[in-house]
Image (cartoon, rainbow, N blue to C red; front, side, top):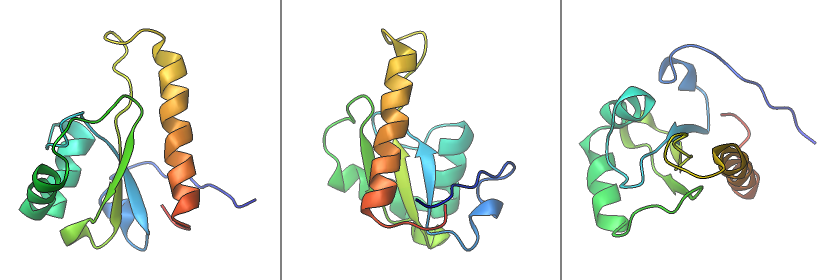
Length: 113
């Protein structure tokens, strides 16, 4: 089994030499604020255009979608994780969301993220 390394700091700056980054996505696959906003700003308008054309239905809870990173030159792993105050059993849903991300990382053979 491989090792997982976690970094703190700026997600965009730390993404150099990575295969992918994980984005805390909203269900509509549109740019938001916080990390999601930073990812979309740095990926460029192509990311928003791609998501609006490819994904015509909102994300399901704990769903994972992978897109190109466009200007970031890496893949973006989008995860629709729970909003604590809006979901029943949010901790269980958070565990499910993380598990789904890890499954996709393994399925796509990402080595650095």
